[in-house]
Amino acid sequence: MKLDMEYTKNTLYINISGIINRDGIKKLRKKMFYIIEEYNIYDIVIDIKNKLSMDADAFYNLLDEYDIKYGGNLIVVDK
Image (tube, rainbow, N blue to C red; front, side, top):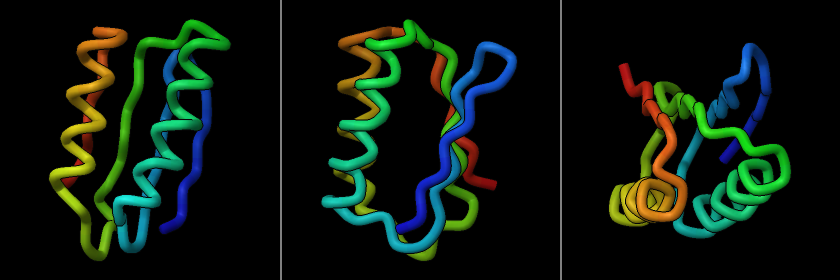
């Protein structure tokens, strides 16, 4: 899994490519939640267009946890 993050125009853009597995999602969660708490960023775009495969349960659990904990604006781009 390759993970790139960029902050611009008050939005955190996260690009993920390759195989998105449970361990990769744990790393994403740790980084994403740290950035949110440290810099108070609540507009997030996660681009998963270039994924080869994905642990959907783990990924959507992360999105649910984000929504419950922060309730910000999160968009997932898949196509």
